[in-house]
Image (cartoon, rainbow, N blue to C red; front, side):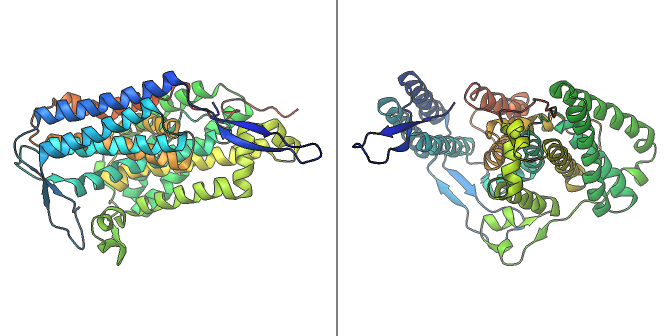
Length: 438
């Protein structure tokens, strides 16, 4: 729902009537509810984490692997920092309850609360003092795990901004992963990368034909394509790869490429500028989509078709052609996301190796409110939840965390993040609506 309304300004007779956009105040119940939730997070941080923290200080190591210029490891007072973070979170919640933050300010408050809780939680995890918290490695693992999610969410964005629901991201990624491993082994990892993009595009074309030409229910169609991808790649794995893995399922993996000077920047150099070609392509894709969607003719037409295809058709935009193009391009990006799982990561294909990442990418798109930057942030958040699972399993935390609970972290984060937005986000108006030219 819109949080703004138009206010008409009264003027003297004969003068021009002007209008201005004013922000609609948040309802008291919602303001208090959000503030109370923030206070609860603060109490959990200050009381629960603070009380159960170990007696030692926490050591942080900000250097990732391959760092050019390193920074010294430093220590912080564990319990003191945890309680301080909790108090700041409680103060923010109290301000929200009493007077409330504006819509834009509330977003930054939410980010601040999340960061403060993460800092407090990592500090708590390292208060046993047996080993330092490897923040640099944690961030590198976050970006590594978020890359296929970011690409998958961009694939969904390309489709849904033009009015086609893409539930088939999972299947398109699975096709891309299989093609990347197979053709990467037969020829080279570069050929495997190209094959993954092409196969993903073909899967996108399959979605486009049935959704646009034959107006099949797009959600059901996406589920069917996912099942088809799972069955076909599983069959081909047993028939081809399992019998001769050496010549069909052992592709070379892309090595990190360190950008001179930028790769030597402390902390962020090894994180952002010592990555594989697939990660660098992800940077380019996100930037291009973000810029083009708001500042190009293609972006204007895409948004118009996604919101009101009939009006777009009236002014001369070829609705069906634009939808075909965007859905196929989305499939290509999803295929690239699949390649990130094989020739960009483990170096082989396994059955159902996407393991729901396509659906998490779709959740990131929703959580990011169908915007490139929002989907990017949501994907990084889900990637961090996955990376945190590994980091916590290596730390001697004050309270032992069950490994099964750690494995649930990414999916719990997905459920809570998306559930919190139910009824408060709006997809493109024509999303999922077939368009038949009159």
